[in-house]
Image (cartoon, rainbow, N blue to C red; front, side, top):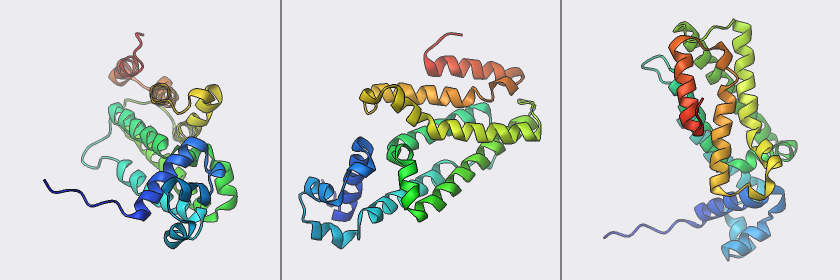
Length: 221
């Protein structure tokens, strides 16, 4: 069998840094810690990255590429409430994979201008997608809301999704990194975001929402 080529040092640095940032918080990790964990010299690390911000920015490029690829609106048909669930599920998976950006957001944005500008663009993109999904549901008469209400709904959905993990961290910081606990937390997050638009849903879509909610949360309504 053909063996896989070994990962390049640069890729290994990014992978390890992402794990350390997620587990311990980006402000608590230095390039010295990263090089020690990698068992390489600081000079070897600086050959690939000028400083820690360079590492953070490179991870953010990966994050941007993934979010642009995953959060595309289906073009061949009108989205349904199931598409909204799927959109949220993918978004929360991505938030969890790059959770240090969200947990350490204020600190990162205060000292990294590039990150500040690009994160604003990501939030604007999320609001645009959420607004489009709501408008399409309204066109199908599955949602009843004014333009102003949809603007508010889209913003509120993104606000809840953006800060949900911070909320969960405050609720249960000791179990924050446990996979089972966070899987349940992300499920609650999906439900919590969609509960914002639940009062505006109509007809079969509202019935389907109740069914999906019960299945997703393992509850009976």
